[in-house]
Length: 335
Image (cartoon, rainbow, N blue to C red; front, side, top):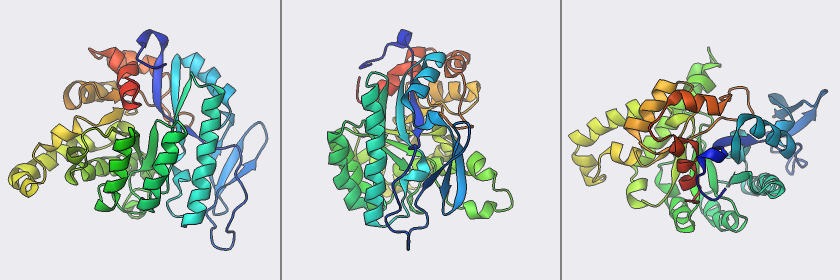
């Protein structure tokens, strides 16, 4: 699929891959967080990190045929594959980070090669080392990736931090998209009494914070051709942008740093549909960021949006083809 064909099916931009196995830990004395896959019965496996179970997964996480069967059932024409966010490994040293990066990216590439008409992929890079990550983008481009997935913070540093600007500039130059996914939310330690609130509440807060940090840093102003998308509908971006706009108004555009309003920049970001509420998604697509929403399900994890085609029908947008495939094709650089 090289352009939008709504009749052919959906493009799902937010799906994840976990490799069926991992290479041996290259630094067992110092890197306890290297992932390991434990095989269980009935096709189930458990990913362990630091010797603790992290997530149970099944063959859909790594097996092409299993994914294709689900896609055919759900009317999904194309999936965009990206690493399970925990695999981004921002806490590894340079050598181990590159090792994991190349291994996961090779896994993604192999899946795309099995079914190139049904898959695209977003790579990972060791963004805790911005100069190294920037150099890796040329490899990412040469290997056929549509872009990269990054975390909503990088070891507690927001994506809008100045240390990442050259990375974004190189991504723009190469025509690579950036997909921001929630990861280890800032302030999650305050939720120790209710750890279940981390994925259900702190993730969207961190995603929204990541988005407004990029706006405040002037990234979309300086790099207007850079395509940036956000998981979970941008999380809490709507109220955060409204409040940021008030600060922009009171401060003379943050002392001239932002010539356009925060909403102007937010309206040019991309957002996935993983908000679980048709009314809110309708507002996001019609009022906040018209034409900038694409389907995202978080497949194959338990929190995924099931029956994405049915959910899209309940949204009832005036431009359904944009949500089904048009915005995704533009995000991927294919339209």
